Image 1 (cartoon, helix red, strand yellow):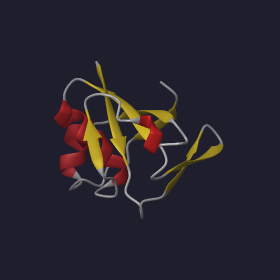
Image 2 (spheres, helix red, strand yellow):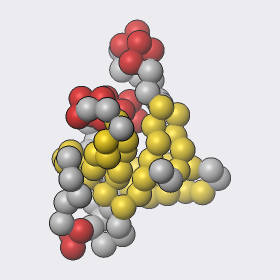
Image 3 (cartoon, helix red, strand yellow):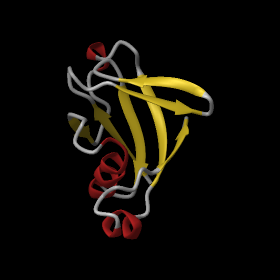
Length: 97
C-alpha cells in the first residue's frame, strides 16, 4: 500500500468523530490515506467527502502551507457497495495510520 495525500479547499471544513474525539479537517491539514493506486485513494476520499476536497498528491506537499500537519485516516472502502448505492457509502473511519 502506498501513502496518498489530500488537501482541502478554503471553504471545506469537515468535523469527524474518530474514536470519540472530534477531528477538524480543513485547509490547514494534509490528510494521509493508504491505497494501492491513485484511483483507489480517490474513491476512498469520495466515499467520505464527496467532492468537498481540493488536491491529491503522491508525495507530501510543502508543509509550510499546512500548519496543523498531517492527519492519517484509515478509510475502509467497498467499491461494490459504493457503486450499488450510487456513491452513498459513508466508509468506515478510524483515526491514525
